[in-house]
Length: 258
Image 1 (tube, rainbow, N blue to C red):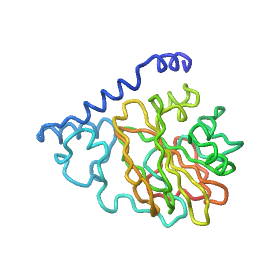
Image 2 (image 1 turned 45 degrees about the horizontal axis):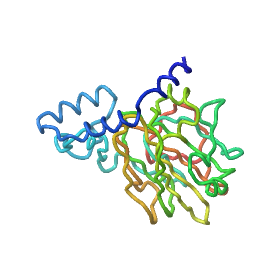
Image 3 (image 1 turned 120 degrees about the vertical axis):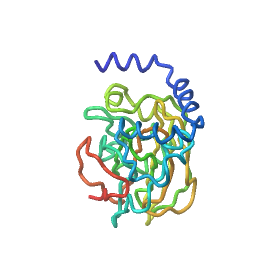
Image 4 (image 1 turned 90 degrees about the vertical axis):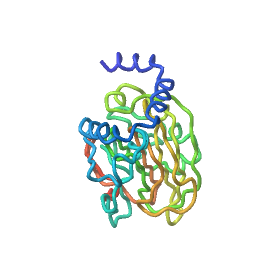
């Protein structure tokens, strides 16, 4: 089954279809239609509209609704050295062993390929990582999991495979093959870290909120359209992730520290 799915996903014109989807989702909607459409979306995908900051009619397009802000207090940031960067379900959490990250059990990929930077990958080797999948109904903004300085953000080109669990099990090196934005970070004491926002099929838009400078724990880094994956890598000497199991649901701002 995985082999058939892999073949079909490789044949699919993923980038063209995703760009078309993004264009359609950015079209302005009639104000009267917005609450009905967004309400249907929330019921279909499990989005919690009670957390949204603002009236539904104020989101002029599906794209704007996907990147909706949360009302104040909806995601209190824990007093911990490490917090979850987004809402979603854990794909993997664990060590960066021999310069590789576990994609799924029994399959891994090179950290240097994900980052597009062998030097940064070497500095992060021996650290730890967490990979989180954002489903369509999740809150689509990604926040800093630690207090740090963002040194730069690098956009890496790639394709746009889906990042849902069946695709992650089917496509080798998926996260390192999709287009992505890599936030190069430095924690207190010079500890290196990175946050990677991975693009995905039908993600109409990925935007960077903070391109450089200091960021507090829980500060916004960027936004996704529709859903995708965020990967956090912390180098040796940095805070450790809690031991969690795949598919465990996490919420932005909750303690991720072990």
